[in-house]
Length: 140
Ligand code: ATP
Image (cartoon, rainbow, N blue to C red; front, side, top):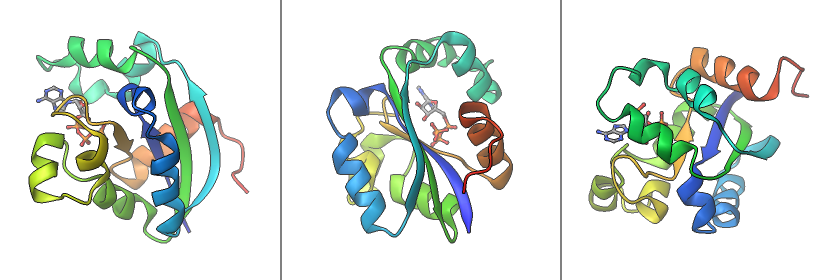
């Protein structure tokens, strides 16, 4: 089975969406193999979003992502990566409310930055992100 990294971002934790999101995850057939709450620092966010480091919104993204703790989960199921990406919906939560009203970002996100959840976008980033946060230990 496939694994992916799911993250509830600071706005999701602040809005007390953790239990609601976990309920949707479990009802959708994922197993939650690991979970932890952590406060990210600037270095963590820079590594996680390295591909955006030259974008105009990068400084704001660092401020947002370090504004409070995040909740990390390793999810497992068949097609975990694409299924979790489909469940969270488009990046811009404002658009998600219109085009994907049942998505998680429609439920708890605000705009194109504060979109309350993250999901790995490929098998390579899933491996990279899971080992970044949870180390190389076998997840069984
Ligand atoms: P994530 O990687 O967090 O799952 P994503 O893959 O849907 O999100 P990316 O394009 O990788 O979106 O952007 C990473 C994050 O950077 C977004 O989740 C959002 O918080 C922020 N972001 C993306 N685009 C913008 C933008 N135009 N303005 C402000 N913030 C943005």
